[in-house]
Image (cartoon, rainbow, N blue to C red):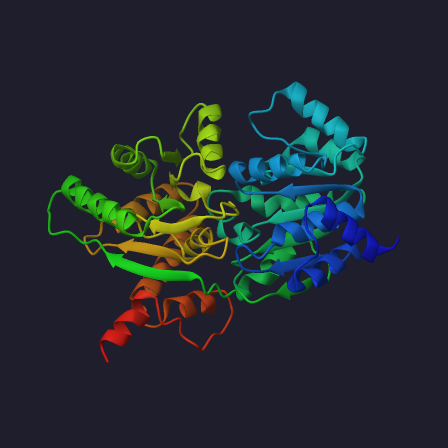
Length: 422
């Protein structure tokens, strides 16, 4: 097989003229059947790396994704390029699932997208044992260490699925937010063999990081929420131009309240996404409306955080302080993917309102796992450290990701304060 020629053909099928410089080595590693870890910034083209490798390897590629919205988006894009791809989720009927698995076994699918929970399904395991599974991709693999010990332990069992296959596929793990300390844990959890690690420059010069104190003197929680909503409205009015806006909140109740509030000012332009929206069909339609640009404002929990590719997002606002720095980095990574300057505004309060939400989540987690509760506490404390840091916000984010950067951004909230203080 002429690998170089096969890579060019695969890229052409995916709609690319040629790979970016940092994509070449990981693609070659995977096509050489070497387990591979890719740590690269948001919008850097990690998807193109494993999709290209999957086409070159010519067997079935199973892609494990954390979010259904991400699965739908990628499958739709592949199908539009006439590449045989499908997905299995809870909305598919048993008849549909059986048909998809038969296609996978007969070599009629190039890509099959699933969530990690599917890898524990007996029918799925049986089908994969009989399929020509060439490549297993764990996209957003930081979820193994971020979520596996809290509310999605299915991530800790992906390696068990790999171990029960008659022939081990090539393994690819990729993310923008893998802590240096967590690499070994991910390798061991997935049963990777001597993986090659590729780390590219994670700096995003087009993102302007900002933080805003939304503390209110009002004693009533409802009044404090009203104050925060007014600040949100002012920020959107000031920074929203022709692009799209993402607003993240910690709870489904906040998402609904924010959506209803913004709908009054931006009628027909607001979509929402959280786990409790039922039935699934209208929820999926709202996600598609935002992904396709039919609605310009999305209000969501972290369920709409990772891997979503809407090129024109010019403003990301965290209505509440995120649960972890990883969540924060993933979510600001949605901004400016088309290269435009984009603002990312982080709300925080000194009333303790966000902290009460986190305490409630910890209490709920402690009912099933003390480790889960302790993990939530430690990660939120790390987020608080980020908030209290007075140095360049961009450089603090890069340090968290394992990259040392000495040159300050000059435009984040902290750098702007430093300039004014001179």
